[in-house]
Image (cartoon, rainbow, N blue to C red; front, side, top):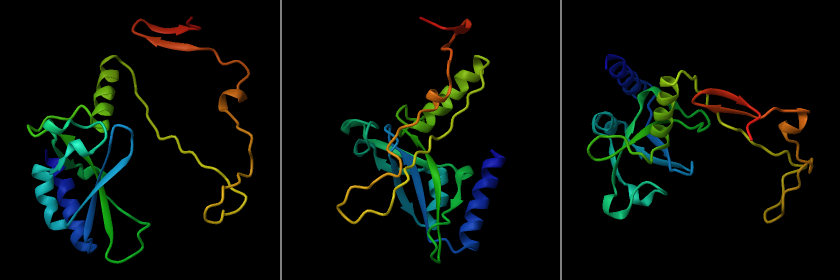
Length: 181
């Protein structure tokens, strides 16, 4: 708990020193769409302790209307100043854990799903790696409004096509299984 308190203190001190006026509390819905709630630094101490309440039924896949109350609790270890804002005073962000009103994790929270699966993989002796898949397209030129963008290359290149023979491997409870049928 001491490390968390230090993180919270660091966040609150940085907000004051850098004259940060808003902190964006980020989380994603079950489809991965980013959601955001902006809070003033004065609200952040309470958000660390109690979270920020919101209507979970308004978020895709979170809750039905009759169980809509949810809490977004910011994770101070994810604190970051937003460098692309460029204006002064600045803006920061933190990712949130989504909780039910009783304080237990929401099963619809993608961060909780990842944490739970990391724990399960570790218990089974596996090391679990996750990373974002970054996709981009190169265009010949910036399209005018309403025009269809024209990519530089229309051919699709798959990493799998670069590997002549890629053996299929499956992970089971008993171990690795080559060429499963």
